[in-house]
Image (cartoon, rainbow, N blue to C red):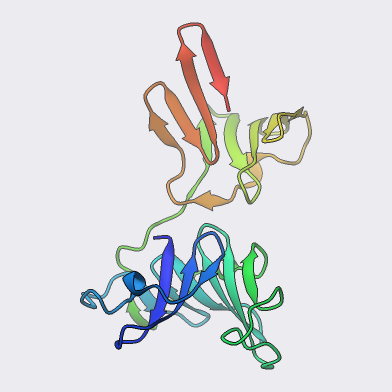
Length: 208
């Protein structure tokens, strides 16, 4: 789920895109010809993008074709004017990692060829408690955890060890970015995005 390769049947791997936005070269172990092509599943073409598993080649605008992972990082930008050839020179104008120019911001489209079966479904990183409260991981990198009523984000915990609020923005009631799984429940713990709320012992509960 973290790597996408472009490879030839002779064994050469021309490009390896990684979910952290980095681009790598010829590693034989990542050759796409090592296994059978298999039955169609989560590989399809829509009007604006080609999705292969958790990756998309997307037409971001009339001049840019973007290679992005659904986690939010873009590895490659192909330019229509040919000013930068990403196969000859990789620099800040043609390659990642970056979070803007992301092909996952393109609205989902109808399947023209291939199959969308077995594609993972994103879920919001938010829990609703009762009718009036939500706890959600917000911002692109999930580095804010917001405890909010319908009207106010009462407490906003940040990854830099600061707490903010109350305020009317940063409210998960306004919608949050989605992740692969949504909240994950564990033993006396729940993980919401990059955050965990856990009972450490019978006397302590931590948000970290």
